[in-house]
Length: 364
Ligand SMILES: *Cc1c(COP(=O)(O)O)cnc(C)c1O
Image (cartoon, rainbow, N blue to C red; front, side):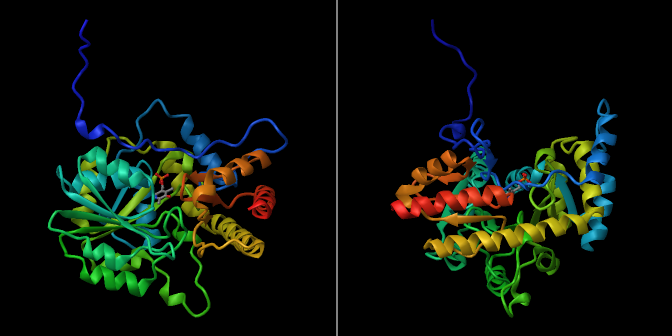
């Protein structure tokens, strides 16, 4: 019998599957998950209450225009509501941006290694990925990215801080880059970890903030999310800030009713509880400093860490290191043959990881 399956788009062949971070190990004493850059803190009481309140009405569709959230965001960031668009996580918004800008064969440039969702959403759209290797220092190579622009380039992602290396491009070099990108190419500043950035001595003015940078640049779009610093990863809500034509294109490409009322209400409550949330971010940043120094003291070489994770370029030893962490009760995120991304979590989890790293180092 000949099988008669529906014809599917050839572009779907060979799409890499998104690998979610491994769950915490079950069994054994403690199981901690340091593999998905999640916030280790449980929801703030006020945020949880707002979600529980919204749960009583989930027989109804959510507010499709996210009115209250849009109003809150506009006020919070000092941008016109017409410059905002929300989506099902900032990955959802990133996918809409690719759909809104590319036809088959058009090119999307991004650094590599960077966020693993980029190749997937580009390929699903039928567009072409152009990957520009990071510098030896694990930072975006903006000159090489400029050189990669062709007349088929429609969108460039700049992941800042970069996932999984944790490095940032600083403001002056970012602006120099933006000055040279043609005005008809959309530059997406993916700032999922923006709240974790801390300046070194004397460089406060050099910290990149897309919401300042986009204002006089019609071809820049900033992506932010409630998943990381705000701790709402499971609720799926992110947003973009961009000039009117881009924001309008995002509203056109949105899945109707994509952002649930639970997510909208939690996001509004989070913005209103921002002080308490940012205190938690401060503790994670302090913990990041402790972990980074401890690893350096063990003899590891690692790049600056400006997000809620650290990056170890372990090459061929990547999977062995991840297995050693597993045995110690912490799951980390290996990229086989390249390196390991380790989320900053609870102190106890970080300590278990540091113990495993020290033992691994001695065996190397
Ligand atoms: C986690 C992450 C996001 C956010 O994903 P959501 O869809 O908002 O949960 C976006 N970009 C990067 C680089 C990330 O690491």
